Image (cartoon, rainbow, N blue to C red; front, side, top):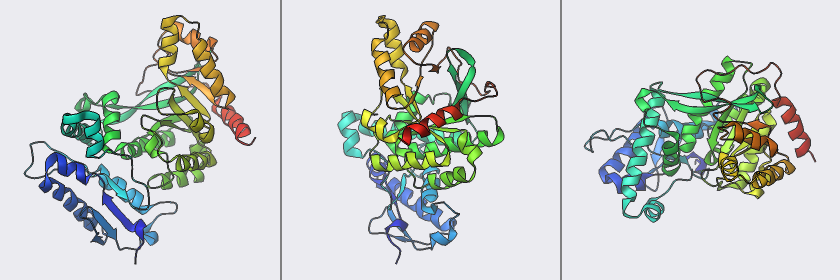
Length: 388
């Protein structure tokens, strides 16, 4: 009899039922059942309507290093469901999880009701509309990374790497990152969206062997399971590809399972890729997490340099924050550098590497860095730090 790792579940069925009614929830379950059959999986209904037990021997079907259920859950989550008989233009997504893993962090009705009160149903409907639009743009080729450089203050033509920031075409003009990413977190679809962006960045690395690029992922994607298995296996098999990849973890949501995040960080470093913590000081990152994850790069949120510049305090607080990160072994990048005054203050406070509009706006075309990259020296310093 198959064990629990062969069970998958529609994790947001309670939310769909509460927001759109029982018939639409039933259609979501039917959609998953039909897709499993179309893809050739034999599945039994579980002890709950939203749960399915896969009876195939998936291990014999898997590629080396892949988790077939992890990829299956990603594919099912990314697919749109267009219900019949519901409000016009309604598109839903079933957040599919696999029972061997802890499910992505998504809010249930009680969580959203606590945060939004009587408006919680409207909030979830709005979130679902936003993420459905984003996934539609991805399917239609209306989504792509725009690249922003991380530069050396002393010589801005010396580029550490380019970060891939998602941008949408005209069909997704209203999808600003500031409203989309919280919606992805609240619906439990951030990790599925991250998978798409990781694919874009890896494609760019394969097509340009001189590029060093970064992809930004949610804290919910800091794991070795599911879709990451195949990617980690590919990186381990292709050291040149791995050495040019930076994975930035953004903690707009807390890291729920720190042990798994630590294991992910170790696995990523083992491939030769670089780990970074993004938006440090503004999210849920703690000093303890900084110490146990041991990132090679720590990106300090631009709020700190902006405040220090506006208040004219000489950057004492910023200097202490940078000193703390450097003492723990991380290489500091200051984000949000928009003016020369901000750049000067950040450098005077100890931050050589900077990112922001002053040094370059996100663009579909990347600047050409100088031939000699400094990322290798940073990795050498990081290996020395982690070995002590």
